[in-house]
Length: 92
Image (spheres, rainbow, N blue to C red):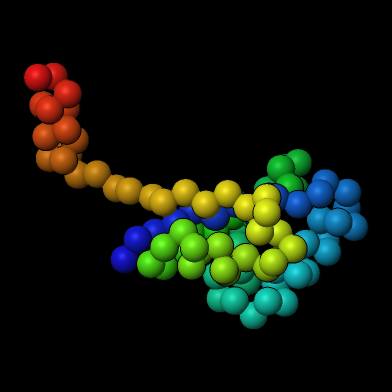
């Protein structure tokens, strides 16, 4: 199943930060209740990795109020063999 990296930014003010965390925690979504936050390091973004069928499905995990600024990236892994094959095609 495809994996997606989701970044959900929020405002840096302390009260906005706490509200965003509260909203994400209260969604009841297993994904969002396990989000990692960069707030304590000055990066006001929630981050999660999900396994879903599409980017559209991944966006639906995010509360509506945060969707417009959310970034979703489909993730890929590569074996050593796959990298070698890809490199061979680029060298030709």
